[in-house]
Length: 348
Ligand code: G3I
Image (cartoon, rainbow, N blue to C red; front, side):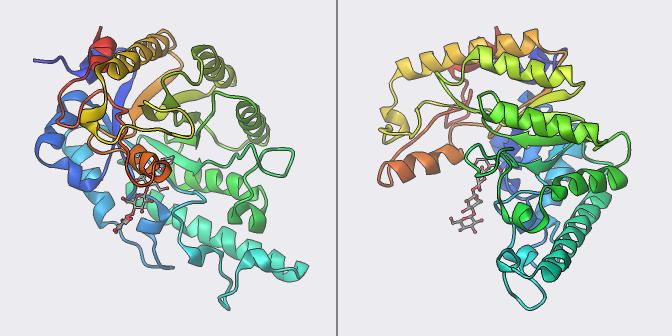
């Protein structure tokens, strides 16, 4: 029988997977219990699912994941308190139903900012109070950096930013700390954290927040990567940069796409993917986990953004760029939950 992944890395870091509640049963549940020591919700803990309408909280799906983690003594990451995507529209509408971003009157803008921050605080307070004893690490804000943003700090000009400026980030962390307590681990999570200029934008923002006393414990590196990108050197440098600030690092959404960017052309079906692609991918995973293991005092969790190749958000991306047909295969288990060459490389 294939050795357990979590046991292999027990001395170094937790091994996690992103899940939907329906994946907790049957064979997927068994794979999770055997190979992973940590889970995170792929979608159901995002604001659009937790508070679809103002004041209407829906914890049913999220609770299933919390329950599974408890029953199986797994760590639980929370993803995500604040994000610009999968956030319901009502957050950004004023009392008259108008888009707050469009307000031009300075007095009204000041009021809108207060209203938005109040909503942010209420959302975080309600969620954190409910789950504080169950969660090991929180993604407090997700993807607040945008290297293409038209400001010189690379801050994403989402509605959060347009209405409340950069204060929403600080308030989010302070509110999370207030209700989660001193022991809670609070993360700022983003993608492309390895590469310039995003890495420096993130570093400067974090440094600035830490100087202001904002309670951040770590950086979440999503790590939606490719076989040849980014380089190991950039990856290592990024982890070291944040560790030198005294912060923890977590790899929060790992997947290794077979494709470049954009993902075209893509193989139509799983059966079309030739073996040599899985060998190249295995080499990549080999090098990556060798690096993670070498840096294991700076990394507390390595989470894959899924369990096995049968379910990955990358398929949507491959399809979108290839006229509706395309399959990716980013994980170390195949579509039938059998181990792939990449699995053996990271076990070795
Ligand atoms: O729930 C509805 C369902 O009712 C409807 O029938 C169906 C039709 O399209 O859509 C379902 O919602 C989808 C949802 O996933 C749940 O499956 C959304 O359309 C789809 O957009 C959504 O995609 C998720 C994506 O975030 C949203 O931006 C992916 O599953 C999820 O993997 C992805 O995760 C993000 C991280 O949160 C942040 N980092 C990047 C990562 C990948 O994009």
